Amino acid sequence: MDTTAAAATSATTAATTSTPKKKITSDFDTFLKMLTTQMNNQDPLNPVDSADFAVQLATFSSVEQQQRTNQLLEGLGSQMGFSGMAQLANWVGKEARAPVAAQFSGAPVTLGPTPDPLAKEATLIVTDATGKVVSRQSIPVSTEPFEWTGSAAGGAKLPPGRYSFSLESTAEGKTISTTPVDVYARIVEARAGTDGTTLVMTGGILVPADKVTALRGE
Image 1 (spheres, helix red, strand yellow):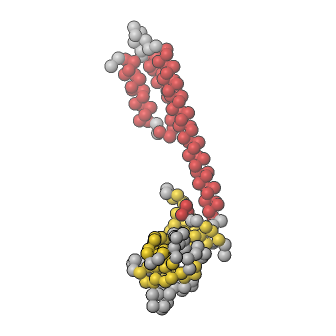
Image 2 (cartoon, rainbow, N blue to C red):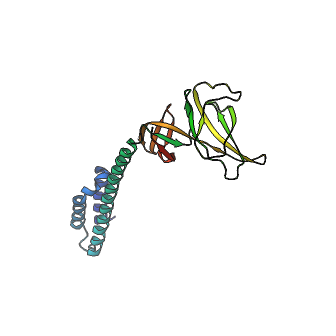
Image 3 (cartoon, rainbow, N blue to C red):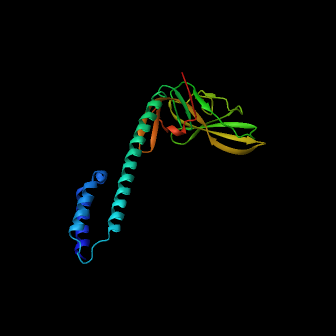
């Protein structure tokens, strides 16, 4: 390795190991020092072409500009995140419609069924927290909200707990589809995380904000 290459390598290593990545935008002086060292230590009989210096300068300048762009984008992302949280704060206290389980406490639970367009009959299937089917009942073939009162298969009242719902669409005695049923539940909290914003519903049920398909007031 000639004197020029050794000096350049030494300066590059020092700049890399002593300076955090996030401070690359403040290292233009370091580059100039490296360039000066390279010029002072180059072989007089084989000097580095001036065009090479220009290429090095242009390369560093490009990296510096890219880093600044990344920092600006990160700042913009943070601002958008705070803005999104501010908007979601208005959701707290409202009822959201989402395909999640419901916390039954004795009061009716509002469901949002979506029967198959070809369905002639619709059956609401209710399962408890263990996955056991505790109720099957016929409901209107409609997308209108349906009030589930907590009745078990035999008509008795189910105990408080977490229940999930699905809709079985049939026609001419044949099952066309079985799909999840949306639930209306009150939002008690909005949380920001690495995977996006998560809403906390009544009973501690979590749902990603992008899964909410409708909101309604009290």
